[in-house]
Amino acid sequence: MAAYLCRTMSSSKKTLHNRVNRGELKKNARESRIPRTTLSFYTYAHLPDPESFRNRFYQDLSQLNVFGRIYVAREGVNAQISVPSASLEELITYFNSIPFLANLRMNIAIEDDGKSFFTLAIKVKDRIVADGIEADDFDVTKSGPHLSAAEFNNLTADPNTIVVDMRNHYESEVGHFENAILPPMETFREGLPMVADMLRDKAEKNIVMYCTGGIRCEKASAYMKYRGYKNVYQLDGGIIEYARQTALQGLDNKFIGKNFVFDERLGERISDDIISTCHQCGVPNDHHTNCANDACHLLFIQCSTCAEEFEGCCSIECRDFKNLPEEVRKEKRKSITFHGTHHSKSKPGMLQPPAP
Image (spheres, rainbow, N blue to C red):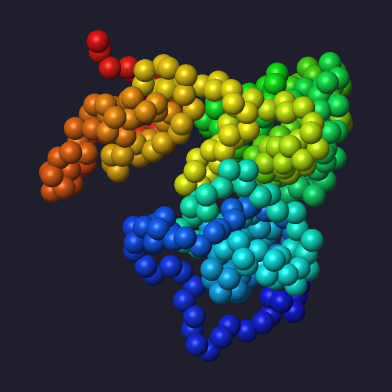
């Protein structure tokens, strides 16, 4: 890895950030007929110079026409990307040329139209997953054993086992494992101590943690062991890999509903069950959307009927504001607040249905 990180930057001063209008990029991506594969991966590793790695990584992935969102930190790499399907093997070969990314497990998207991302963004962060842990002796590599889908099904059938969802409330709202504990967390950072405190009287039970692709439950299982819990496990590859394995091996699928994903799709269906409701009218629905009022941009669940009535907005106020002339909106934004001004994610009951 050291040799890789020490490679010098090209004297041609290649662009290391996107310089094209995002609207144009999104339009081009949606109109493109080039098949693309959406995937995610992460790895915890020790990177001595995240900035240098980030710059070289950006250049190399750009040459492969990779889109996506990648975080780089001293503790490793966390990525959600899409790549032209014809270049997938070349991408794997490239990863294998970097020691700490060699033989990387990649979670391939379950439902994928290739329109998940439209540009490449790689950011250097303090952590690849914000955790709020300040203890100097915490070691994320001391995590719980990984469970395959079959092992997960077997262990969770044991009445002495507890299943814990380590995702945020708006993720578990649309889909989760049977009988899982769903902590009402807003962020992973607040969820770690919340879960440890919730399970104080269950320390002798088997604790199985899961998330979307494995990165959060990996760190969560290490945190629980750090807090003194002994029998802590994690679902290998998260929900994405679990769904792949159950389908491939003909196993029982214990996940109910939709898996929330952090890209343009906002979700991929695992089972036909719809377990959530429209935040505006209360009918069964699990379609997440962002409020069409850019001054709000609240993430919420909206059915097609409400989408038409509110024009993609979370409220009448947002709908009316969205339709004002641009110069009027610009002036009013100085004094008006919306649902999404202080809350970026909606909760059930937060949006009131329209008056009859």
